[in-house]
Length: 203
View 1: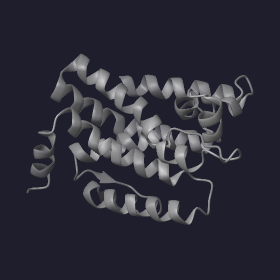
View 2 (view 1 turned 30 degrees about the vertical axis):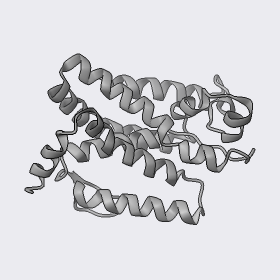
View 3 (view 1 turned 180 degrees about the vertical axis):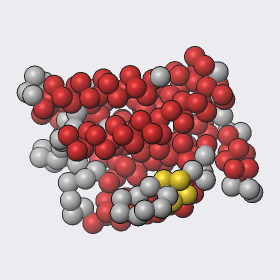
């Protein structure tokens, strides 16, 4: 299962950065370094390191629960090998795509850094919502699951609002664009999937 491989790789690299084996500062996304120093690797490497155990565990647990859903549907839609390749492409490209907005916004800010796989995980989450829009998603402090079709707009609204306020150290913009990209990627690969989405909603 590709999801498990991604989780293991991310956990190992993050752990190495926690222990100082890997220089986390050289792995983090820094728009200034990317833009002015041409350190393009940072638009991908930042997705392998995290700010702490809580950050890592939350992202990897989310990926663990929703990654197999997307893998299963990709295999059904595109075949085993092609589906696996597309899943990897979705995850890896989402790391880069989710941070494009911040790349331009903070290109002259030497001190802005970001790290974590949240943008890619958001992409996987929203791809799973595309395939199963009625699936139940648990939100912190809410004891009952929220259907995906309700969770999705609420999540996007929250990310947009928090990114606009810019009052914490969370990459809400990356979450937003990762989610949007995750929903659109399967449709770009096969537009007819949208018919499946509507049928799941009973439309």
